[in-house]
Image (cartoon, rainbow, N blue to C red; front, top):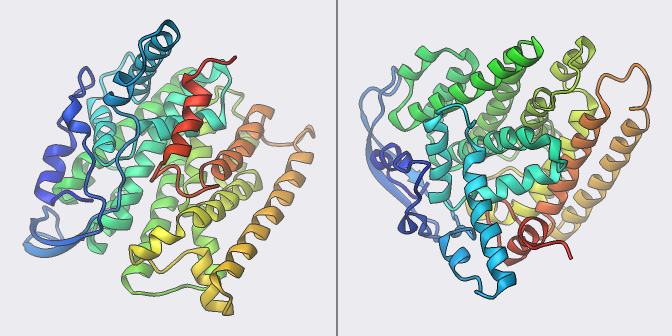
Length: 404
């Protein structure tokens, strides 16, 4: 990911929560490159030194850095906005760690997201789009942690990791055993430990507050998503383009909507019911339809960059290969499919007021908002992974600028 492997773990975790040096937020090279390095992977399968060709991701500089705050004007109104911006910067950094806990590994993970050009602000903006009400502050904090992990791990699967390494990581998450870290290469160890500790802390909080053991549901969602990541990696490595049907069946899971919504269910502090847990475990349509919309909107916004990176699977490409459609026609078909999926989601919403519906009204609204924020994020490109000035203005108008 634009970092050589021996420095990946060393630089990955070098910043602490109480300071973020200005010079640490410099952009990584944007040009796509590959390089061959010698890697010593400490695992049962990868015990010897091997030459591994690593790709680098085409990350753009983060838009949310120290210079932005310093560039604000000094008149009274702008001073107020400057104070708000500085407070927001501190608040967003604190989102990824509970105030009463010392999860430095989690915090350091998020600092590295800053290094990669993947800002916390984009993750936080996503959570505000899902659930904005003041009483859900803790939910937004938890989801910012979750989406930050998803962003980093997704790029490890897409770009940095080898197939053998990714199989080890997938197996470690499926086992959910701290001893599994011994099988992982060095750069994956701290990532797994940060994920393991953070999710276990969330499970502890749910058990303490609601007397419900959420670990099986959370780890199942993570495991299913990582298996979907792994399948996409195999397609890419084998230069294989799946059928459109196979891609969608895998893609609505790999897009991460399920992981986000399963975490949301336990973080909302609503009534947790047996019927709700069963529906959650079976990935009820209320989780499925927003995830499909998320996937299709993501493909519309990111397919060009993915093709440049050499990936062989997206809904647009699969449709073009299968039907012979042009890219423009394939995009139009996907847009129509998004509209059809919205109709299915609206039909699901229409029955959500019934007495035997498994989910509460706030959770239903948050699931709908997942589809909405996905459409907002990918409407004009990849506003999450490659934010531009339009994306920055959305955040400014929503969070920083006063409501007039």
